[in-house]
Image (cartoon, rainbow, N blue to C red; front, side, top):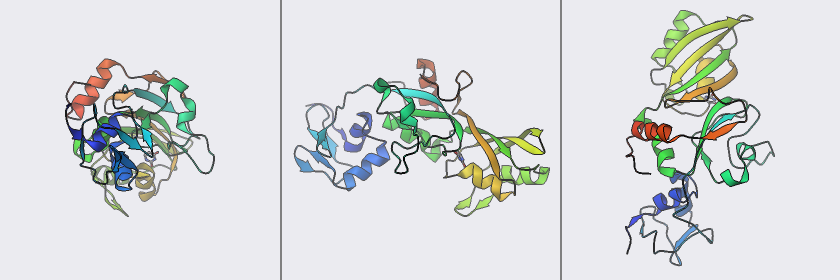
Length: 246
Ligand code: URA
């Protein structure tokens, strides 16, 4: 017998979806282990011996992990499918780079760094607030925020879903009366940067993520992507408190 592991972990590693999403699939009764529906996310399985079916289809627990760093262009949706028929990030991937999932999201009209992977453990770790993974954005806002407002943003703003954690804010320039800000945050709430800027009275006009956990996309143009290097992956895993074994 092989080593017993939690079902959602095995599913995430096989590229089914993120670990959190796998838990939802299990709770929804869509996963069978050896012919029986497994509704408990903690179910222990032996990936080498047990038959695992997701929506009736077998998974491949040993499929290799992929890590793709992309410069998402504006006008693409980050999700895997879109009922409005808009262009989506997976459309930019070649066939053999398929079945990877975005780590977090970027809005349809936002651009910049997007990491895609089928490594559910890394996705989980990178998006967990405990690890405080920094994300940096270049933001063109309407008008010129004053020093007081920028300091408020740094300290924390009270948004509808609670206060924001301290952020780093730098005024980088000014064009046509509008400011260019560089913002570094450690959280990933929905539309967070847009909501922070709107809160201080300077709505976002353009938003680009330039870095995530020490990765950057200086070498990529909109729509381009590349695989992470071994060193980049090691650095990310270290930052998330994951060991070096792949
Ligand atoms: N914050 C936002 O408001 N939008 C993004 O796309 C990313 C961060």
